[in-house]
Length: 509
Image 1 (cartoon, helix red, strand yellow):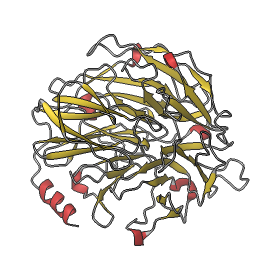
Image 2 (spheres, rainbow, N blue to C red):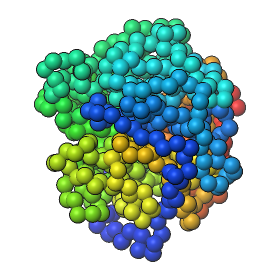
Image 3 (cartoon, rainbow, N blue to C red):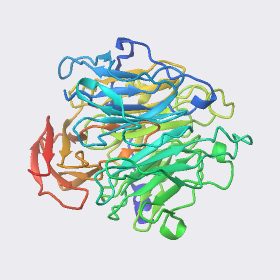
Image 4 (cartoon, helix red, strand yellow):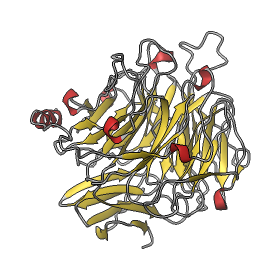
């Protein structure tokens, strides 16, 4: 409770936000895409619409694989010409054409140095094995993944202790085969554990409450990860809640574990340490309030309303009905050393209880710890039915750009052109053997005694995620001290790194 009281005390003295026009600025590059891409489809594609962002050809320029629903999913290969040049993409052609795709997540399953893709679908899921020059082959059967035939809408992954192959968690939505559905017909979820360099038959995770986001994380720094599941109350209707699973015992946590009983129209998860204590706060998007939970010594507390994170109604226009939040992602868009928050917004379809014209949010963190809305000022408050999204530096200028997937409207690309942005650096971590991208590691940045923490995870968001170097805004600082805590707890020494570069830290160095 003490942290919440301190936050309220700070916010009581908050100054007006951006009174001097000092706000992020984005340039819309959507018209420069090589093809108009739309996530489309009927009721089975009301949800989903994710995007995976990763480097598929080793040129340090993030590429994107966007779900298409009834349209084919597409790979966009980044061909931006130079640091700070306009963001440009070409169509990628080196992969199977898939329809029914709801989302995708990148991870290097076989640790060969090429990112693979776990592709979620309405129908059998697929693993695409990455190769050179953004070439992909279907490895679903080769790696013995049970593809199922469900309606998969969420995903997360980690490497469990002693394993050379990852554990995959797949979240399924409504059971399409249930004749009594769709209400109260949520499907079970799945845990795919390794069997050597293949996957064992899946373990059913029940009860399932229509999962729309999953995240395996040690957000409270307890020494081992847990699986957080965000569920859609619209279809489980009663008796369900947000869930957290102990991966070791396969037991769901409850209030005796400090896990609150919360029911949401849950859609997306984002985690980031906002208080500087090393433990991540967690944002869960929903229809209506977006719930930010503050980590405490005993569990979680809801953020005070004055923090400005709830984003429960449209902030422009005259539609006063509740908002519908989907993908959420933290990132320092103006490089001032404070993490900001983007939330993709959009009505499910024509749901009359919720806003139809529902602008996306770009909540910029203020010196007092509160969030101030800037999406309309930054040029990203579009009102199409947004679903998935990603913050990533697409043109190597150190500023986080934005990709947004819309349902029944074209994909958006927004280039960050903020004139007052601060300094930055990025950190990529590598280790030999399995899990070469060190999923589960912690990267810490220390500036003037304050520590900023990033956990390397696969999952969260809504139906898509990124596998990229960790980005740190530095403000005016020209250097930062960096430390890596590897997945087994081994820790590097602090080392001073210069701003304006992407640094690679290897475990052997």
